[in-house]
Amino acid sequence: MCGIFAYSGEPTNASQLILKGLKNLEYRGYDSWGIAVKKGNSIYLEKHVGKISNAQIKKVVSKVGIGHTRWATHGGITIKNAHPHLDCTQKIAVVHNGIVENFEEIKKRLIKQKHRFVSETDTEVIAHMIEDKIRSGKSIENATYLTFKELRGLNAIIVFYPEKNTFLAIKNSSPLIIGKGKRGFFIASDITAIIEHVNQVYYLKDNELVVIKDKDAYLLEVKKHKKIKIKFTKPQISVDDVGLGKYPNYMIKEINEQPKVIFNIAKNYKQNIKKIANKIRKSYGTYFIGCGTAYFAGLSGTYLFSKIAKRHVNSAVGSEFVYLIDFIKKESLVLALSQSGETIDIISSIKKVKEKGAYVTAITNVAGSTLYRMADDKLLLNAGPEKCVLATKSFTAKIAVLYLIAHTLNGSYDKAVENLIKVTKEIKKIIKNKKIKKIAQKIVNKRHIYILGRGVSYPTALESALKIKEVSYIHAEGFPAGELKHGVIALINKGTPVIVYNPTDETYDDTLSSAHEVKSRGAYVIGIGSKPNKIYDEFIHVDDCKNANIIPNVVIAQLLGYYLAIEKGLDPDKPRNLAKSVTVK
Ligand code: AGP
Image (tube, rainbow, N blue to C red):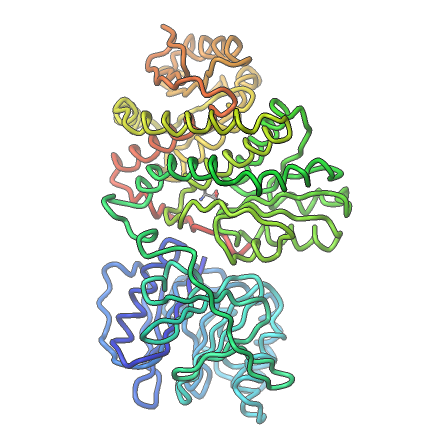
């Protein structure tokens, strides 16, 4: 997912400042990057393919500039395709996050008007469109606004007009945050990129045009040419939330933060949880939707609600929900789960759900995110920024919330709080369990790992497999234990690692039989639960946490994945090909 960063304020080493801002956006995933800084009366442009970390960048002192990390969609990973993109006059620079769905027809029209293109990107058309409108006499503000309104798709753009020390920003769906600090104004795709510089923030709303000129920043109502004061607020995160602290990387930091996050949810969420429970009681059908890990949280919810609240809820993958939407009524409740609040498959689904008049509740970790602002009701996980591409604390936070909602419906909220506090203690014990690292060292050279479970241990197995595969690149497959003999068992042979989630709940006996079945085909069986058994080659003890076993169990998989990645010398925070938030389809 692309990253955007812009600065306007006191003269400074603008190229370095912007580069550092882009570094804070690296976790979103990218394959090239660039900056544009005002130098004298022209634009100093520097673009690179590859990682920012080992880059040397020219020192350019300036008062204003923009930067961008690109995750390629249209056009290969080349310097020419990296942002910022300029117009023919080289007076306008543009950076962009999103996809201009109608760029081909626009590009054809601009080429006919003799515009010269240097890249294969959709973004470059934006710079030439604005140039065209300015040439026909429009102001930079009007030209930017009219250009944006012509773009089809979900986009965020910053237009840099150094001649007038001006940059303008406008978006629909992809996020842009404006920050105000002692040295000037900042704009970024994510608050973590600017938090060290600002003490006030504003989350730009869809189709609002913000103008930043020298030391002034305002919203502009283009039609009436009316300036509107920006209502800045205090940021909800601090610089400490963003750094690594004593940890070597974000993945292990965020794994360690889980007890604190879950404790906070257990202790401080009663009103919010009660409101969602009441909404579920009154709705005609409740649907949990999410992508990747967030989907597995929703799927876990269907088991928790059935078991604890004796209530049927549906879950669906965000990208599939659009094909299931015909049965949604205005009395339906859609509960959208998304750490970033920017996942395009969720945003697109929710847009359609809202067109049908259904009620949308967002469970997200990012205040001001697109999903947060689209939803009728929202619950913030308050897990702190999750900068590792892998979802860890945001997953267990979602489970804790769904667990409390289910218990609220069952009238056993206080018992649930007590059990979650016990879970936080169990997580601390698991994090200290040295056996997990030893097991990782034993299986690090295996090509396939299988994970099975029944009941809520089935989505646990799915989430565990995702953790392992995305950070260690070892193929891992989670599946319902009952499906073993329907096919998967064909893949089990001597030494195949099979992780068996076997809590002492109603699934215990049948799952133990599955452990015997894989063992008799030579598997290396790793049992996880509160009851050891000689069938296991390895056993990781987890105290019985009743219906909340999924939380400590998944922490084991997070750690296993982490240790596998470290053993393989991989970067656990930024696995290849992955982005922290998938904001383009
Ligand atoms: C999980 O480890 C992955 N990073 C990925 O599956 C992620 O959960 C998914 O892209 C959804 O992200 P979201 O929660 O921000 O919507």
